[in-house]
Amino acid sequence: MTSKPPSKYFFIDLNVSDMTIVNWGVSDTATLTGNTEDPIVHRIFLTEGQYNKFLKKLR
Image 1 (cartoon, rainbow, N blue to C red):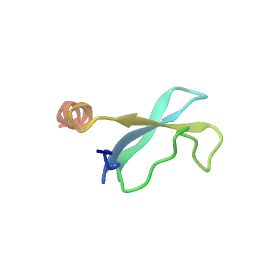
Image 2 (cartoon, helix red, strand yellow; image 1 turned 90 degrees about the vertical axis):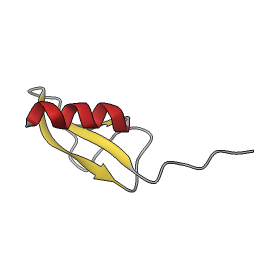
Image 3 (cartoon, rainbow, N blue to C red; image 1 turned 60 degrees about the vertical axis):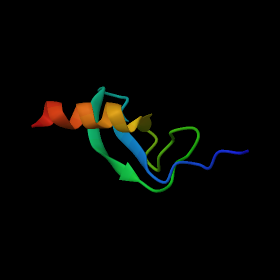
Image 4 (cartoon, rainbow, N blue to C red; image 1 turned 180 degrees about the horizontal axis):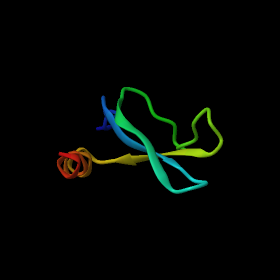
């Protein structure tokens, strides 16, 4: 039995030059590397539980 890939990917985008969060959200696609179109922004993937805890801190 093979597992199917997740249908949702939870992420935080981090500006690596000044270590600030520039975006967060949910996507239906993911790269294995975390690379984005902007070379100074790196995407960090989270579990759904980690993402929900992050959102609670923002409220």
